[in-house]
Image (cartoon, rainbow, N blue to C red):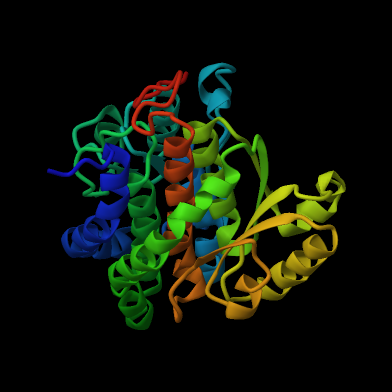
Length: 347
């Protein structure tokens, strides 16, 4: 009998979830991309919470691979202020695991009213969001029972990566994406022996989480998971923004979690890691670079040879497992974080 928490089971399901999503949604997304390609000049994405972090990833993904400007919608303009902006030229995307939140549905509905193509990325086919959109990309994650979203987040990232790749029509990038489930399994294997060392952080009450570029989204998502699961005040920053003031917080033993895989922004993260060492920060580092990991008090390794554009799918796993393990060590229930519900409806 498996005595692990529901959250741990769902974290460890992620390779299979993404493999299933890619297998079952590739032709759907290929048809969608062919249908809407050339019908928009920029993208507007509506999302909340974990899904908003997936949207942050899309800003870099669609910018780098598709030359698209991506804006995050302001749902309150549609609901509270009743002043939806004009969306000429936009593709309107909504990301929501449950597809229930009225403010996210309202953005899609307004986009459709204005004659714009609309796409829902959701785990719930038949939800209000999926009914409102022209097209749906299903996350294929199965029921997510734990309150903290994990498998639906990484499936959202993979769905966005699939969409971007199909818009670009790039079979080489598709091959890289199809290899990601195996990299997720390798990531889980690398991390499992290191989780006992999380005990070191049992009495931490604050934490900075740093990422940049594609993994700016990962910093936000890991910080959210740590807050949800452990009640630690985890605050996300880009490495650039962190230098513009927040770095003044750092003194002996201040914990900083840096997400620093190889890629275009790796040099900037390496430089910050060295500076934090000089300030005697307590460093937790997620990376596939052995030189960077050697600077860590807690090294959380990633497999080699993951393309930077796909690294957020794997780099979030160490943060998920860190939050789960720390919550358990603090005597908290990782399946039912205090004060939270699985479906949150905002207006």
